[in-house]
Image 1: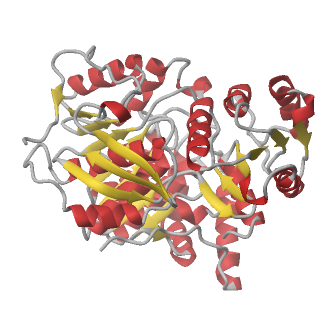
Image 2 (image 1 turned 135 degrees about the horizontal axis):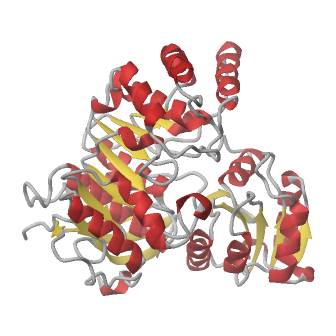
Length: 485
C-alpha cells in the first residue's frame, strides 16, 4: 500500500498496549438533495418548523455540555439506544464517509438512518432513512412529537436546547420510530461534548484531523484530537484514518484507556491502487478481511478513495470482521454499494461547457485536497474560482491553497449572517493573488455569471472550468442557482 499511504503513515510511535484489529488471513441509490415540498400545506408546515428552530442557539453558539441533550433523551425514553451506531468525527471527510458507510450497510440489507450536518440546501437532508432524506411530512411530525418534551427540558435548564440539540433528538427519535437496524451519526463539532455523543457506538470513525474551529476545539491537532477522541467508548472499535502523528498519539492513548480496539489506515487497511476513471476513479482497497479489487467510486480525488477505505473498514468492523471472524464482505455487494454513492457539494459536477464543480472546502486542509483533486481529475486549461467564506475561518490559508490552480478568482458572499463580506474577502484575496486576478461580485448569481464568462475567455470551450468553494452554504446556494435541487 506504499503508493497510496504516504500521509504521515509512520504511526509506530504509538503507545505500547493498544490492541490492533487485523483479520487473520441490494444497495440504496444515492439520495438526491431534496427540493421544497410541492404541497403548499406541507411546505408551510415545514417553514413553520424551520422558523421555530431558528429562534434557538445556532450551530456556532455552543455551551460545551451534553447535560441538556441527556435530559431530553431521558424524557424521550432513550431512543438512541434502540439500535447500534457508527459514530464519525474528524475535521474533513465526515459527511462523504458517512454516506459511504450508509450505502454499504444498506447494500447488506440493513435498514439505515444517517444524521449529518450541515445541510447543502434543505434541512431535511440532515436526517436520512433507507438511504434517502426524510420526507418533509415526517420531519414535521417528528418535530411536533418531541416538541412537548423539548419545552419541558427548556423550562428546567438555564439555557434552552440549541438548534443542533433539537435536530439531534429528532434524528434519534426518527431512527427509533422507523425502526432502523443501524445508525450512522456524524458529530456536529468536536466529540466529547457534541450533542450526538449520547450514543454508545460500537464503531468510532475518526477521519483526518486538521485545524478548524480552533477557538472551540484547540490550536493544535493534538488538542483537537483530545476533544474528538471523546467519541471512543469503552470496548469499541476505532477506525482511524491517517492522522498527524501528534493527533494519532492522543487518539491511540485514549483507545488504550478505554480498552478499545484500533484499526489504522496504512497498516490494517487502506488504499492499494487507484486510477482516475471517467466519472470518478477505480480503486482496490485493503480491508480488515482482505482485498477488494476493481471498485468503481463515482467521486473525484485521492481523499475520496481514502474516505472509501475508512468506510469499508468501519462496515467490516460493524459486522465483526477482524474480531469475530476473518471472512471478507461479499465483493459484488461492496462494488454495487460504492457505485451508488453520491456526495452533493463535494467535488460535484453540476454543469458542462464550461464545467462547473462545487466543493464545500472551508479550511486549508480541505482546500489543499480539493486543489489536488481538481488538478488530477480535470484537464482544465483555465480554471476560475468562485469563493465565498464564513467569518472566523482561516480564509488566507484557503485562498493560498487555491492560488496555484486559479487563473482568476471571483470573490463573493452567501446570504447568511455568518458570511464574510465580499470586500473583506477581496482585501485578503488581493494580497494572495494580486489585484489583476481578483474580481469582486457581492451577489452570488453575478459571481457565477462572471466566472463562467472568464472561464470561456482565451481558452478552448471544453477546456475551461469553474470551481465554487469556500463554504457549504455558498455551495448550496450556487447549486440552487445552477438549477439543482
